[in-house]
Image (tube, rainbow, N blue to C red; front, side, top):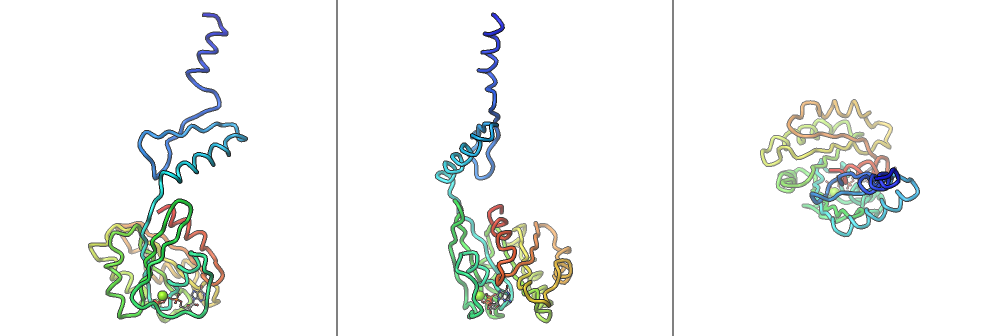
Length: 220
Ligand SMILES: Nc1nc2c(ncn2[C@@H]2O[C@H](COP(=O)(O)OP(=O)(O)OP(=O)(O)O)[C@@H](O)[C@H]2O)c(=O)[nH]1
Ligand SMILES: [Mg+2]
């Protein structure tokens, strides 16, 4: 075999400019993405494959939002859904369910009333969700001990073990809002064991870190 033919065969066995990569979740076993390394065509292929994936892998995720009354749960759902922020809110009676579509993922958001009479419902609506989102008014120093107790009380339920937890310190637009470190300390987040715990400081009013929350939803 002459050198030219050897070179040609090597190109067939190992296509130059291509490398393979297992696709991420959600993914069918055995699917391999072939991604050209040339940056000009990479954008096209990635966009094309993302579009294909979005056709085949539509996902629905359920999340429950709990926390004391006035924490900002309904405000958060409204802001995530693109309805904007309003000062003029009424208490949630029982619960609301809202479907929000982000890319190829549909989020089913259970927004449960936070008044004392609805807190016994929290556990029922948190069973078998992808994640529990616990919203706290980080500027209301008086209600923080109750927010902490209610959080730790619900986390001991057997039915909710291992469900990832996202704790959101809301209303950081207010000057009296706690820092993240002080908030995590007040909520005693370090003592939570046996599940993944995440914490972000947000403001529904100013839309601070709402994109971070949405990204977190998508990844979990
Ligand atoms: N300053 C400020 N106020 C907020 C923010 N988010 C919500 N609020 C206000 O807090 C109040 C309560 O908000 P809701 O979203 O109704 O609270 P909730 O947790 O759903 O309350 P329940 O339905 O009773 O459980 C409303 O007046 C909101 O405008 C925020 O980021 N900053
Ligand atoms: Mg509400």
